[in-house]
Image (cartoon, rainbow, N blue to C red; front, side, top):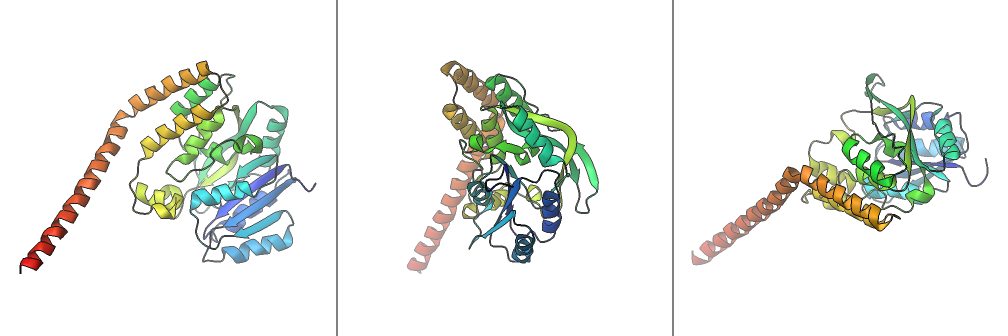
Length: 311
């Protein structure tokens, strides 16, 4: 392998000892070998560091970095990309598994199709034991030459967004805002990527996404998920729909498209906001409810202080 790898695999991890070795083995045992593995440990308190250092010792493709404190998922996901060197890039969660042909088939597509920016295979959802629960259809084979058509199909189709774990052109990914610190920001990233090029879905089931009690998708509340993305936002208000609308707007505004194309996309964004009007309205009411409760608490505390003074 040359000093500059063709592909970089970014592995953000926090307390991942349960599945980490399985994930790393599935990465290192690929039929395609010209890659590096960049691990960023988010100040884990379990055996994660020990496991990672053991893999560094036995495979020179593995690079390990440890954060002094938990940066939150979004910053750690972005860090592994910032540390990467490859022409192509792939995020790999420590819960998930990749079939042995995953990298080879995706790299071949990107090498053969310069207009493709994301290549991903079909997904099987597995449980904590590795048993298959279902075959998931992402439906994101975005092959239109039109950025408008790709974006519209994505916004109307996007679900679990397994394509974010596909192989992505690093040169294009650098032009995006990457993973931001709010719920569902991976959806916005993929939408932004759709404005730069095509998505190619490999028909084979080569990706195994694990669901279990501790995974991020099973966090109980939107507030817990927000804190997972960014610990500094713990206890903050959650505005997923407004954040998504703003993310779509920013993605369209900065995309390298004509005024005509952007105008069509902004009109489509207005349709999205109309479709989501009940969610947008509910989030505004949440703000008023929050500040109303906060005002009532302050008022009651003030009355209590005044009463104590009079006494």
